[in-house]
Image (cartoon, rainbow, N blue to C red; front, side):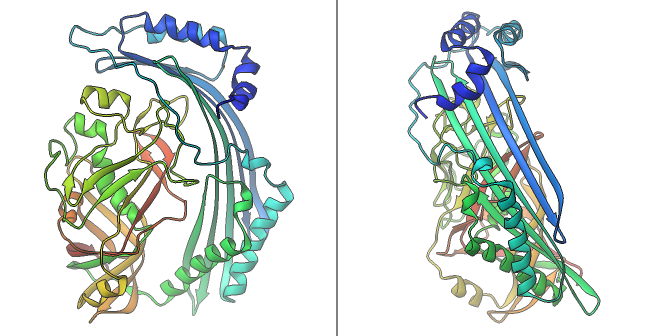
Length: 477
């Protein structure tokens, strides 16, 4: 990372740029009456393969590159981007980002050294880690594994996505920082038919690895999860409806935590007073059993970054500690305006987008209860261990999520699977309805993508098993 070999190869040299050129551009911008500015260069390669019924249905490859230029004055932002990286394009951009001025109340951002402390993943190109033939064989193998697990499978679809991204950032402090970001994901979906009824199951995962990460053991894990989900749903009955006790499984159900609570803890919503958590710093907002963190420093995780998209090292930020709200996720602008510490959560989808406070890997820490102990404590309720889509209102905290796999709990035991269950509630409210937190915290397998204001970024979620005493379940039974 310190040699800048890859950013020179893919960004600087092809454009005929030297570091002194970037110093010149940043000097021209910062000499204007502004508080902050940065240059964000990006080069990315993406490859995608899809297999359906034993045949390659899709294969695509793309290269994208460009530069985003930004200046900030108070609450005003000037931004432009170009898919051409050249000195001429940078000079044209300067004219736009110098179009704003700070007012008398603006206070310049502190200038301090930004140290790059992380080396969380290898600076490799996963697209080149194995050949095209082996990539197709990966998909064929997971298809064969899935069909072998259950003869009732009538359809298997699998996909493989790889990304190689080089990011170079010229910071307002004058530093030049680089990150080389690999990202891979493999997904499988199966359809099972029995007695004229069809059900679907899906699974997958990945992270910041080469494609050699997908060993036979991992492929078998994904295939088994997808098939088991479909088989269980074949026997599912319509879900009950009403207010009841709900137990959420560990891992991927943390997507509910991410959506219903996590977004409300991002700095921009709280600065504007539009979050359900606005103005509650230091107050009790959850059960004392609950501690929630956002951690962008976990090695090889899908949501992890060596630096965020403003050149700051990512961090482990405690958001809620023993029920008390203690922190927000912050980028440069919102941290400055709120007089808080930058947390390394400034993220953007690409050079063509503005950065904003975003989650990385957001999860709830372990509690003290065994998962079986939690289920045994429920006389009548449901257990949900997998979720599909959902919707959230950040201002009110209200949400609705569909459970893709769930069970009825009767007298402390899982009695039968159900389908069509929706979990409806309010994020801040359910935090106080959690009565038991398990000791089995795990992160998702590496499939999460978060959307905000039209931008998508890779994220991670997780949690231990949770018991929520009172929440509304929408069902068809």
